Image (cartoon, rainbow, N blue to C red; front, side):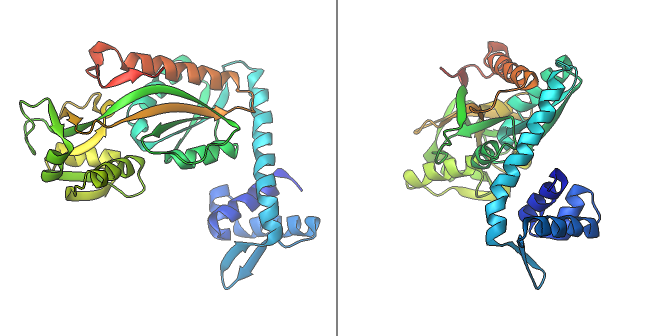
Amino acid sequence: MNLEQLAGFVEVAATGHFTKAAAALHLAQPSLSRQISTLEKELGAELFHRAHGHISLTAAGQTLLPTARRMLADAEAVRRDMDELAGLRRGRIRLGATPTLCVSLVAEAISRFHRDHPGIELELVEKGSRELIEALGAGELDLALITRTLDPGPQMPRLAMRSVLGEDLVVIAAAGGGADLTGRDRITLAEVAELPQVLFHHGYDLREATSAAFESAGLSPNVVVEGGEMDAVLRFVERGLGLAIVPAMVLVDRPHLTSVQLVEPDLSRTVSLAKRADVRPTRAASAMEDTILDTARALTADDTGLAGHVRLAH
């Protein structure tokens, strides 16, 4: 067997579709089908059930999948080791982050890193915290920035987690319009529930945290719009459609938004940097980790306007 065959097998398993897998791998479908057929012959077992256009893993396929993923991750590690020979002049980093961090901490960190190391290729994967933890465990990422407002679920012993920032959730409104927060420096969750509100989609880490807070307090939010990602929610609030509860860091360079502190209860979250504990990090990954930590320190400076809402974790 070879790596191309394993990559094809893993992609078909992920998509459940030969045509979609071929497109993702930039292959013609007949070529991918031949790869899988050859792999099955070499292993002496069928890997997929093919019935009425539906593709699913056989028992043999289920057994092979984690091994194939690990072999592909090992091959990627070898490539990265070769890049190490060129120092930080070339290489590749796979960084995962939650959507809320992609519009704040990650954007700042990537900008700094690219300025200092323009030869390093960056791949950004944007997913929820639990999905990022799974991707790290599968060897699909080098680093991941995750948030913890709720219990993130079982932790994998192979992962090393470092708390980076503590961050308050604040209530935002359009500056000079929409729901009026003028003259206020704080607002209670009960007061927020009475005002028009823009909500994230279900399954979004932040939506789950705020929904849990409303439910715990016996409150139901007055929803105007729901189902958005971070960029959409911020834009809706800027247009005056309603309030939103967001992490304080997203307010950097947002002059059309105003914010007040959320109290009764205070809500906050922890931003953590996760990596594999059983894999030696590349020089490029270590440099990215240093850049993220430097960026976190910069975001806590008084001149960012976030003082009191964002603090270094201990």
